[in-house]
Image (cartoon, rainbow, N blue to C red; front, side, top):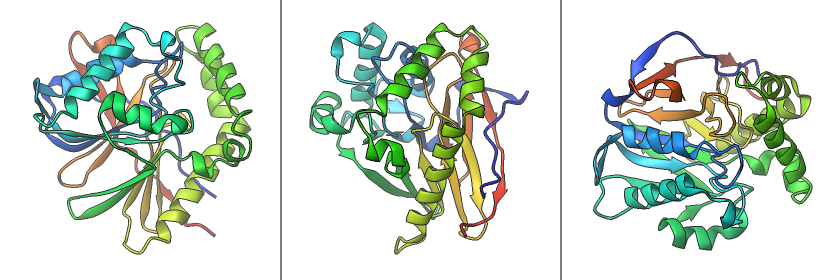
Length: 281
């Protein structure tokens, strides 16, 4: 069994506008067009890494699936369009950074349209290297049996959960309870982690860490028998703190929580939370 735990907050606060230059910035599950999307906060985060129009303090921005909730463009507000424009700018050939877009289950059917809209190639999965280590990124939905078997019905619990988030109070007590205690969510996390680790183990060349989204639950777990780290980058929806992953030039990986309330003074919480789990049996 997986013994890793979800990412928890601590009291360590670091200045967000004094980032060290990093290799990769990874975000997932923005769900643009959803009533609970945090597009404005993600835009603020990306701008905090910006030195000028064509220079950022990261080399690679990886969008790890479900960037759009659907293609009902009438639901995209001004902030969503501004975020799309910012991402297009990051992927411009004059910019020092590049954008990697990975398909999710919400945006899988419109890959060609997204390529034209954002100006970046769309991948099903992506492998890259930093500091002599190899990383694998995918959305994770292919290891969610419910989504794969009943794709049309799978949108119903997503819609219900979005509604709960929208109606929930500022502390998101109901949303947190549903996500953290629901056997469905726990099962999805377990299935995805096991599926992705097994998939990475079968690859010809060694994979040191895997990244996914889909479940909206930020998590990091180390599979000792496999020697592979599993990272879920969480989401940018609802009123809970959005999360993202960073990979440094020396191979250090962090799951970070963006704190919008501190935006005026430029603060962000960063958490290192190493957890050891047994390998797959």
